[in-house]
Structures are given as C-alpha cells and as structure tokens.
Image 1 (cartoon, rainbow, N blue to C red):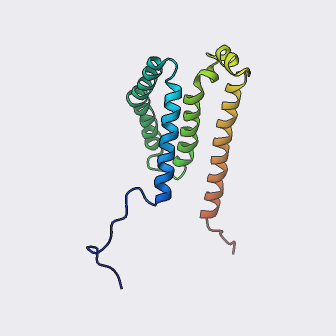
Image 2: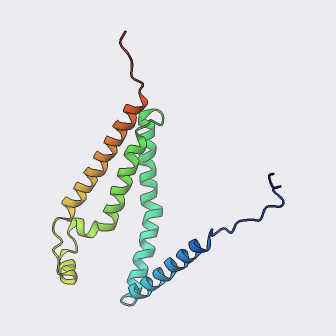
Length: 155
C-alpha cells in the first residue's frame, strides 16, 4: 500500500546523521585551516581570495563558456565527443590555476626556501598529466564508440 503524499514525513535536507556529522567535521576543518592560513598576512590573503573569485567570475567563466560554445558551434550539434574534450580540458585548466605560480617558475625560490624541495619540473609534470587526461579520454571515447557500433556481418 502506497502512502499518500500528504502523509509522508519529509526527509531532512542534510540527509542522514552520519552525513551531518561529516559535514560538520569538514566545516570545522575548514575553519581551522582558515584560522591557520589567516594567521600571517590576512589582508593580502583576503585580497587574493576576493581577486581570485572576481577574476574567475568576470574573466575566466565567460572565456571558457565562449570556448565551449565555439566547440559546440564548430561541430554543428552536440557531438558525442564533446564531453571527452570538456572534462580533460577542465581538469587540466584547474591544475593550471592551482599550480600556476610553480608551473611558470615565478615562485621557485620561495617554494624551495619554504619546502626545501626543488620547484623544477612542475611545467613538465603538468603537461604529462594533461596528455594523460586527454589520452585517457580518447581511449575511453574509442571504447565507447566501438561498443555502440553494431558488428556488421558480411553476407
């Protein structure tokens, strides 16, 4: 017997108690990291975060939305391979944004002074990861395309 929609007890938006506990722990961890991060030069860090948000929303989002629109327009319709280009491009772009100072070598001395590790090779590793992402996506596309095509029998 099905319940009437009127008699149904609404589920909490946050899900199970375990989900709520994990969410609260993640907020606590973020708060701790924020306090530790802002312990030094809090003004410049705040300016950097606000600037990063504005640059993303006002510059980068329109750029990659236009690139995506151009990709779809160039194919004439939404082709099956479009997502196989989007995902590795987005992941590669995210890695570039996160590691940009080390990939370009702008903070190599500071990085070496703080971590006692060399900053050499970040650009090469980023290019290798990007190539692996696009290569893996191409292999996945080939496998999916091969499965879709029915085998034709020669008679």
